[in-house]
Length: 304
Image (cartoon, rainbow, N blue to C red):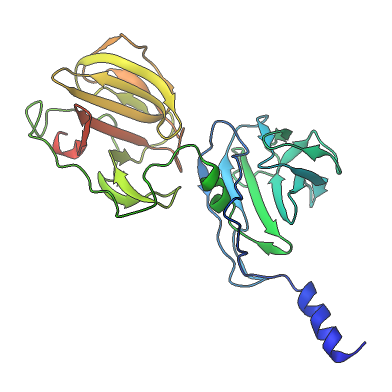
C-alpha cells in the first residue's frame, strides 16, 4: 500500500470532532412524552478523545416508553459496558438511547414515534433518578440532538426571526403596590422577570415571571385571596394553577409536580395550591411565578 493511500485510510478511520451540517428538512420528535425537561445539555468535545457530554440527558420516569425520534432501522439493541442501549439508523444519522430495555431487535424497521423500549433506572446518568441519555451521531462525529429536536418542537416561546421582542411596560401598581402579594414560596430568586436567553430553546424572549429556586415537593401557597380559575397542563409551563384575585389580576404557579386545588375552589392568602416540580419546559425543580394584569405579565417582585 502506498503512503498516500495509508494516510487516506487513517483519516477515514479517525473520529471527527466537527459538527456535521444538517439539512433544513431534518427534524426529530421528542423520545419521551410529555416533552421532558433537559437535565444536562450536550457539551461539544474539543477533540475526538477530549472530555465532553456527547448527548442530551432528559428527565423521565422508570418504565416510561421511549420512542424513536424518526423513521429508521434498529442498528443495535443490547448491552454496552453493562448499560442497555438502543441505536437507530436514520440513513447516515444515528440516534442512541440509554438506559433502555429494548422491545425491538436489530434489523427492525421503526416509524417515527414508535416505542423502542422502556426507560430503565439502572445505568441512568441521573441516578438515583431516571433520565434518558439521547445521542446523535453522523458516522463517528457526535452532534447536539437538541438542534434537531427544537425544529420538531410544537411550542416556541418567541419567533427566531426578526428583531427581538420588547417586554411590555408595567401597568400602574395593582392591589396596593409593593407588599400586596405574599411570597408563594420561601426561596431565592434564580431568574428574574425580563428579557433572557431561554436555557432550553436558546431563544431570546421575555421571561414572563420570577423563578424561585426551591426543591421539588415544596408547598406552593396562594399569594392573595381569590378563586382558582385554571388547573391544567401546558407544554411550556407544565402543571399549573391559575388564581383570579379580582380587578383583572391573576397569579399563575407553573412547573408544579401536582396541584392541590381544583377549578372553582376559593383560596385564601397562604393556602397551599400545589407543590414545586419540574414539569413542562424546565431544567430543574423551581417555581415559575407569574402575575398578570389583564393579559399583560408584570414583574411579580414589584408586588411582593
